[in-house]
Image 1 (cartoon, rainbow, N blue to C red):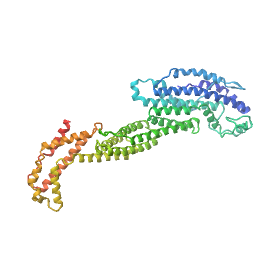
Image 2 (tube, helix red, strand yellow; image 1 turned 120 degrees about the horizontal axis):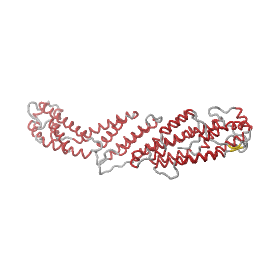
Image 3 (cartoon, rainbow, N blue to C red; image 1 turned 90 degrees about the vertical axis):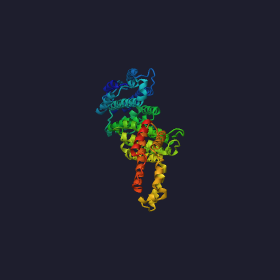
Image 4 (cartoon, rainbow, N blue to C red; image 1 turned 135 degrees about the horizontal axis):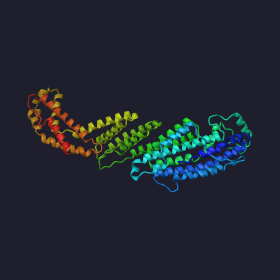
Length: 522
């Protein structure tokens, strides 16, 4: 944890009236003390903050450098005291550090500190846990960093306001501005040609400028930490976007123009850029995917990765302020998924196109159904339709005409009927009489039909992947399609050969038994 400067702020506040007096009577000395305070505190905070970020980085990467643990940081308190005591002007030595925070900052600090453990605790994980917990660990460390920085900045800002008699929420009175113009020296910066301080629109601006000087290292350190998190795992950008957005929202509710709000807002831009890059990289990987010509396709890598991304994103963005960013990313990703599934299906040599489409869109539909992503409802319906269409197409294509000669026979019968011959008179046609029909039917005894179905099952099994587990779904659909063909033939026999006594050599129940027996035997 970052060192607490409260005791020193408290001690220094005893000299607040002196600073107020100097501000009114000797602005040059007031400005000198202000500059000394900023110079010393900027160096002190830079050292403390860099040590703090170094520990955070070590915990993120799983390394630990001796001598860089927070347990040693209380040593800094003596350094704080020495440096603050060395602040001096004509008024003599000043000592100390901060006043109480405003009500909101106290609540914010207390709540966040109670919810997060120290960074040291975050590092105490067994190696076996790290594979599963890396992202969660990163999220907690990142939140810890932000939760430590917020109260630190708010406390310092509160102290500056009270010690240097600068109003945080009121414009600088005109009398003070006029007095400042008459004195030697500037408020924060002076022109090369004049000792008169440059006029600023409000004391609030002066506070912000002092904060920028004192905490100049926070923004680059945060950006370095973000770059490290992104390097460890690009999906960390999801965590960072949600956490940083929340902290920016909180800071802006307190003061939209404050140093904290502005700094976190600047860093949020970097985080959003990393998030966009994460999405773009996923799309690029989809477009560059290559499939093996020798093995079946199965569930494409980018389809499985979209599922992982969406599941992770839903857990991270639950009730988040930046949900709109995620929804836009979803639309980009899912359209790319759809386009590239079709592209791979068209290029596939080992696995039939319909199988690639059927299996992958079934997986997408299952993912979207499970996660219930409202902005992808239309895509969920589209995925279901594509799955259903290609399942039916594959079944019809693969099943083909298992009773091929019988099918050709009845195609001839239907052609005669189409030419105007009445159905009950077809049997008088020489090529389509009862004897010819019986001859064709005898070529398909139950034993041969079962053998053909068994070979079909093996063929389908070779096409489908185990992970999507659609074999029985496809097999049941083929069974239904075969029975539909069987019933069609039965209907034609009944209408075109009434009273002939001609029947198939196997029944619908036989088909059900064959299909069930084959499925159980494999």
